[in-house]
Length: 258
Image (cartoon, rainbow, N blue to C red; front, side, top):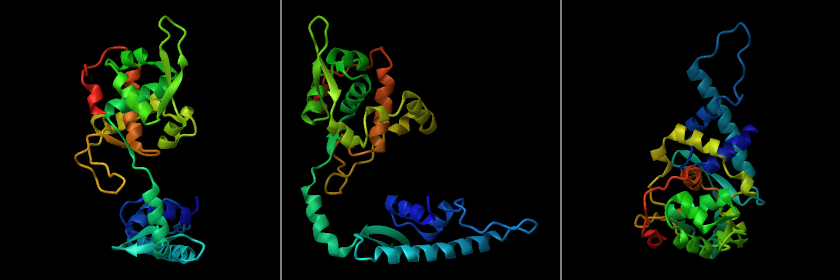
């Protein structure tokens, strides 16, 4: 990746304006600095940092000039001592109109996310099989997921009673930014995530912003958005449960939470 591409990606991904010092620290190992000739003493760290920041200013200036082209809809601006990527003012009306046309994000309870995870990894799967894995009745949750178009029926299983089979939908792939279900993280990846972050940190109770951009502190459910890291974290918990046949704590009023 070029240094310009790296800077653009960092500025775009950041929620707050990114300062020059932060950018310098992030690209320090990218090979931007001039190598120290063999036999010479390494430069003073302060002087080296100042030189790196000077080079970054030049590159950022080129990026700002490039974004100023009429063919570009985004611009890099200096805001509050840092750099931020935003849409150009002249495109405000178009962006506002588009934002109003968007559907609000789907909100699912943790129980619904767990059920969705079981279906994603075990599909096609029946309601009794889902309930056995989770240790609670999942019929109410299934109705919610079908209503949200995240799962659909996939025929009936050839056993006594011929229970309905469930599978995920194209909307599920769109919501989670997946090419297909084969891109779902493996159990090994989830185990590593748990060891690295700790089980308690997998579920962030921070209020999630709704379609207006304002956090809804009263809402007890988790927003489901494309390629969400929080959603993948919820899959970690559900995926772990799907490997266990032991019942979990009962939840007699689960459908009321949907």
